[in-house]
Image 1 (cartoon, rainbow, N blue to C red):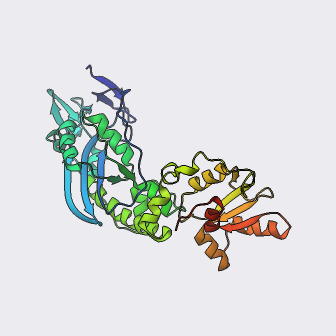
Image 2 (image 1 turned 180 degrees about the horizontal axis):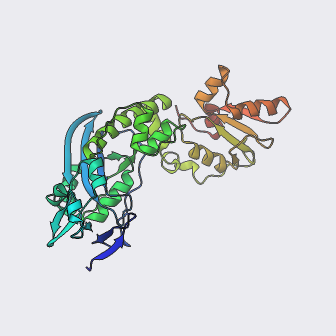
Image 3 (image 1 turned 60 degrees about the vertical axis):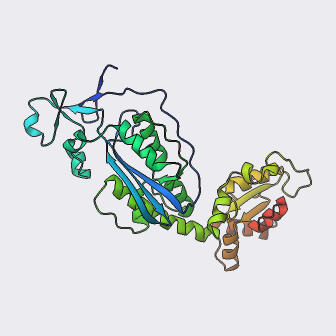
Length: 346
């Protein structure tokens, strides 16, 4: 394969050993579960573009009930590198000789941030060799990580190995646990949960921080849903848990038939998308805001309990105001909703 070159965002000429591939191997969709045993995957990359950037370090740490039981960690020698001209050599503190010429796998700013030098990468193994050993370590265990779908895409792209483990995307769990957060990375979540993480951004340290965050998120979800099993059942697709309701259409006399239904608050026994699917299967209409056209406002069980304590959401206050004005609007609990659609979830 002929080498190709590009100029990166800093105007530096970069050798690209692997041009954009049209057949980057696909990875599986993430699950929403709370496993007791899992492997946290972490890596250091030169960037976030799976077609141009590369993995330079990968770590996988096995955990059981939050305790570390085993670890795999390796540096990876990249196929791409930056060319160093002879007049620049005196200004470069760290470079390697590849094919008779001076090159840099990573620039000085990257080494300063991670502590990974060009000499360390020069002596590291290839992505394919590391991937073979990593696959043996992973086996068929469930993987967990921050941006793990992208991590697996990088691994699949950089080697001949295809990683097909089931995996759990930590950020998706975090958004279920802390809907008010705008966190977009593991570092944001660490700040949210007030977890110390220091200045190191090496792969193994990323794994350790990811596990700490997962344990906090897991605790929040178990408390919110009343248990691990309850959360996992609520996250399963309706086609898996309640197949008899997927294609059925209730008769026109069903209470929800041609009625606008709005949900508010976290449902404790089912994800909202599944509940909305049930409404539509009964011939109902789902809405997102309370208006004069709303017929049912369905409160999550915890939201209903808050109502009894006088703590009301904006949707609930709006609905109660419409009822006082004479609107034909019913305010019901999550459990009553399940009874109306004929589901026994006890």
